[in-house]
Image (cartoon, rainbow, N blue to C red; front, side):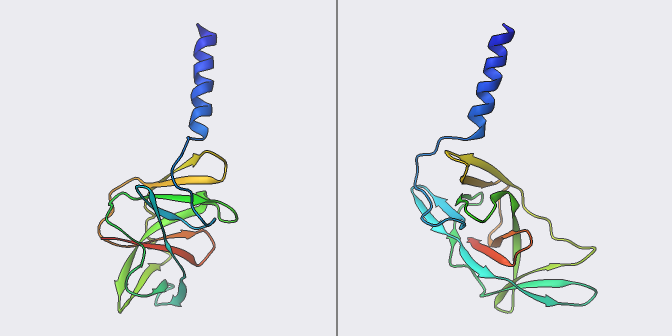
Length: 157
């Protein structure tokens, strides 16, 4: 009985390590794609510019009022094929639209809270599914990697 239970635990652990996926694959590595049924929509890749504000506040500014990558889904799913970008280091943030641009402010005492995203390995060690764990309000959002100003933007409408 113990051996059978132990074997089932090992089987469950290995099955959870990588899920089978047979849908469309991202055409480019290191770019999150919105998954819309059998279609993949690339997120908008931009560079956020730093602007220093008052009281040690840093605002990251992204040109344009809205992203070209759009989804009607309040809990979107993304696919990412890793190469140089590490999926586990991506954080998702809500952006504010002001004066025709998107921005997010960071200050020593007021840090924006990252939105929770579940990361699942698919098929191989390089393909990942990123699932937003909560419902997103309509608006602008961006994934950002630790230590980089590169952002992957999308809009929930």
